[in-house]
Amino acid sequence: MSQPSRVLLQTTIPTVIDDWHIGRFSLLRDYLAGLRDATGSPLFEVTARDRDPAGAPDSVLSQLDTSSFDELWLFAVDTGDGLTEEDCGAISRFRQRGGGMLVTRDHMDLGCSVCTLGGVGAAHFFHSKNLDPDQARRRIDDTETSAILWPNYHSGANGDFQHIQVSEPLHPVLTDPDAADGAVHCLPAHPHEGAVGKPADDPTARVIATGRSTVSGVAFNLAVAFEPSADGGPAIAQSTFHHFADYNWNPRLGAPSFVSEPPGDALAHSPEAQRSIERYVRNVALWLAGRPVDTALAA
View 1 (tube, rainbow, N blue to C red):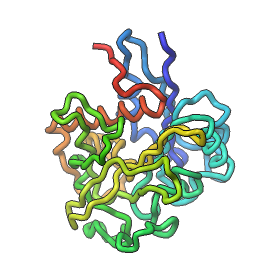
View 2: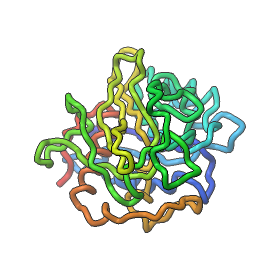
View 3: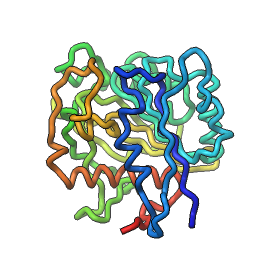
């Protein structure tokens, strides 16, 4: 019996009830914790937590490189102060020792603390830090929520889903043997996604999936994959944490009071889209742990 891979789901804010605290990612936590291999053994041991109070290094992130975790899913939901220098150093060393990472954020400058992370942080473009090198993309896309500036790609309402375009060659995290063409084609929608792209100086990175704005029709990057190498473990830079949030999987579970856009319910009525999203999440978790994405599951 193989040991479960240890997964850390972590936000970059202390626990604040009326915010995107880690409790708002409970469906992701429960899904990963519930996966079993063909022998019935758990594939993942999941720890989900918010960061410690701001002003000092986080007790877990600042020692991540010496921990027993195999992968980190970092939900950058802060406004710029979510990671200390000590946190960033340990996270970078964690990946250098082979640890897997998914780093995600949201619109404008939400989650811009990840800019201080080497490698994966460079794949995230914000409004005032690490701007998109393509100046034509520094423009408002979502025109419905006027307080939110670029990047803010509108892929649909929270609670709906978007059809994605996979990039060739098909990346392992986007494989879906149960789909007609063998690929994942759905992710949760969000009215104002952030921006990601391949860092120009990193040959291990490439864009693996794109979406299309329902407002402007503009194509935008959804995920950038970093292949494992001698310099670091596997990693994913994702355009928004809303691809993994409870509210986007099931709006009835609620959102912080500052969320003003009316939700949709298309995802609730599409078992195929739900299955596709779960497949992507499973693939990412397996790939980040260095396991085959076609690992057989319990019947």
